[in-house]
Length: 227
Image (cartoon, rainbow, N blue to C red):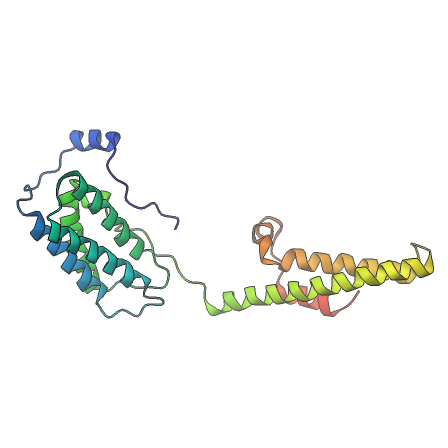
């Protein structure tokens, strides 16, 4: 994932916190606080969402179970603070699952969990939970089909390159002349197919962006058009 998950406090973060103290009531019942977090995350994971994969639900349920275990053990102190950042990272990861969604009800439940996690972590909510990081989008069907077309065209062209190279070697042995017209024609075809593979194979995605994208239709025309 491109976004950075929440990190545990460091010495530099502690200095920032000291410079801008957070005013909140001290936690008197850690078990109850962990229980609220667990229930809120479980409720968020249980909302009816038109997800693509549902991975966000699983991440939130993992966070809920961790908070439940912490409630049962009464976890507090440094271990509790570390766990709060761990669970926050799961929430952040859930918000970055491509194709999944977050309804108003889910956002509300996550907000409750975030407030209590921030209290345990002793930091501001905005420094703990992603609130304005856009969720990555899944490529649409047209993009996926185009990539599949590139892959198939590259496979076909590469296979013909192999066969033409074998034919060129055989013909050169029989003709004994490198400048024979047939030999030159095969060599030209090999060059064109090599160009098709260069533009079509997915390994050259960055090269496409650097040298300009050659449309799959144009590549197909070259491939089917012979020399």
